[in-house]
Image 1 (tube, rainbow, N blue to C red):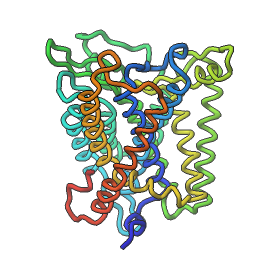
Image 2: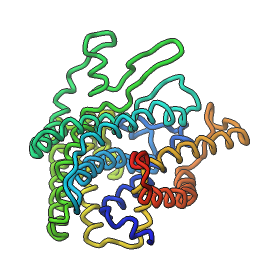
Image 3: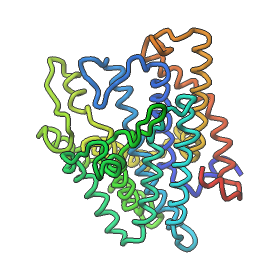
Image 4: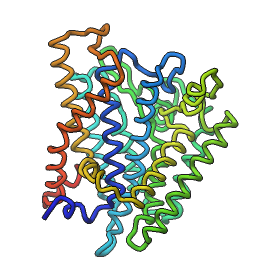
Length: 382
């Protein structure tokens, strides 16, 4: 059985898109390893960030929304296979969510710093909590899940005025749901929520709601049309809302003498938590890319399916590979950028990422094959 046959029961466009954003994630994580001396804020400071660095970081904005949206879509596809009876996705979502959170607080956190001085609850935490939330919400009618997802995505910025000081009642819950911050800060150890979860619950619900368009009962032409309309609506809504320079993004945009800098300001959105505008541009582009992948099914991009069908394996392995490479570079060259080792140019970040993608391709492809053919229950969680 060849590799494409191994993937025949998966939706090609979903795996290709997931594989693409995995490689964009790789670029961002290489940046965080060897370009941290030019760290960017959230949103980025236009006057202090080169255009090359801005758009490198901007590309990474698509990763979390696509991962979490497709996690919701995959949950529906799991529950509604093209062949055979429907399945209850609730147990699988709950246990996989717990598994992903366990990875976040153990292997993933250690891979960033080689220590546990601060426990950062980042994207894996958000994915895990979103899956656990969806495991409960799938008991509701399908349209209710969709309405809830849309309401959260469009309405969560209305809650921006709510905040709690550390120690106040509600601080911990609100930090987890909406405002990033420390859950615990001790002398030698801290726990920080980097990815507030409420908007991501909305995204995973939206993915679950829209997933039926990938059903075998929906023709390819109908699916392409719906995806293009969703993308066009999202981007049109973004332009209208952003031009008003009010609701949907806490940081207003400004005009510059340079058209490029004005564009950067216009698309400079808050990620922690993701603003409405952030989600409209990332999901809107994702819908259009999915439509194009459905329409043209480019065989030259099918190598991305292997990355997209084994994302968790790739995620953990690439983090430890980056840690090992960074430690080797520091041992050879020292910390040449203050307290960090770093490279001088953004193009070097991209070049390193391309090389690492090549190095990781075969292991990921082999694991993708193993995951598809293995009968071991634990494999499906990866």
